Image (cartoon, rainbow, N blue to C red):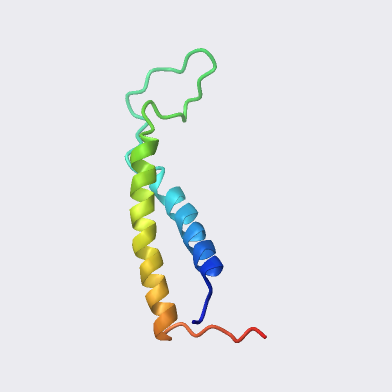
Length: 83
């Protein structure tokens, strides 16, 4: 086995956070927004839909992670020997 379960988990979490930052701006538009009131920020979306974005992030990350694991385990991406 080229890598252990802890390394696999670390790779998945890294992929998950990267995909999250790619998914967050999707579907956001600042057009037709009323001026903010009571300390609101101009850049804050009216409806962020975070649950939908987290679900999308999770399945996209799972696909990218699976492809990464196939590449590692088939030897297309050789890993250095540690030890």
